[in-house]
Length: 291
Length: 133
Ligand SMILES: C[S@@+](CC[C@H](N)C(=O)[O-])C[C@H]1O[C@@H](n2cnc3c(N)ncnc32)[C@H](O)[C@@H]1O
Image (cartoon, rainbow over all chains, first blue to last red; front, side):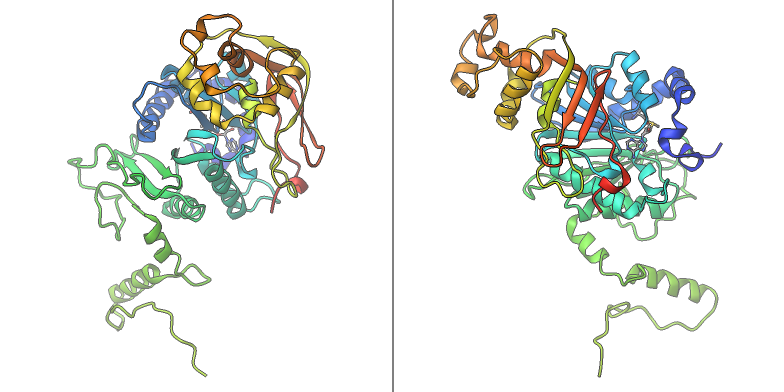
């Protein structure tokens, strides 16, 4: 079965029938609860027993929010599917609900939210579901507004399903551009079923600890044949892009072809037996224009 | 929707600069009692827009619940205050967490655009031409 994201826009896909099916499947309930627990753990809220004001982005029928409630927190949930929210109302979820499209930006005052989670939702932003949709603009609006509404030092943990590495990198790069520090934590990277990716983001305050937590099941026995992440120097996480590293990453030309791309291309050419200049520190550098 | 949520909401339409507080017109509201947590309220207090909260409380049908001016921290968190029915912290708790707006309208303070609240859920979805580019 293809992923929901490629079948129809979310507000169409999650219609009454689908919303009910989704929320009555014990398998889905269990998976979403497990992911939400993990997201809450990665959110690393202060361990002071004081309830926090959290955000659940793409809250759907409230499965993910339920985990927040169980831990005693207050939350505001937003979702673009009215049918999903209707099911949430039926289930009498504790959170306050908003019918809203995250791609239009979150309409919240600056600095008021203590932490945000999003479970299995932000990958929708990579699609253009309407002719007026420009994924880049929507990603920019979303991450910009998320950054603004979070209190300084607060975190956002967004679990997502990316179709490919490009989508995942796109999410990371827009998050960094909005000012976040962080990257992607991958749990169970060697299992096609259990593998889960979390974008773990910290807002502002460079003094706060922004090092990425370790993914689960990283030291897995099985050799990873699907792990083709060639430029990862850190086995724990993929894409530990701090702000500095992102700045370097952004040094790419208009066609999005930076040094990494060039190096990969050269390697490909070498494999095909072409004669390619050796890689040096000058490779892919911008040349001064000469007159 | 609770008034705490209303206090944190803003309109983010194209052309709007701050977009809060959102005007609130109430057709139906209810009260659902929940346990008071003084530590939570202490954390929320500095983030509140008091005038907006007082106005929203009146709009919801409780004009006498909150004073126009915000009480001091000492008044809120005086020893044993949470035990008294009428204490500032009890009133704050009621205003923020126990009043629910079921039916009504939110109004963008700058553009006048209205957002309907149905079954407690505000519809904040914008038209294409209202989205910031
Ligand atoms: C797989 S469901 C997850 C729901 C919930 N977080 C959970 O864990 O059960 C994905 C949700 O994302 C919502 N969604 C997709 N695109 C959205 C958007 N642009 N704005 C808000 N919600 C969106 C969908 O409507 C759907 O309810």
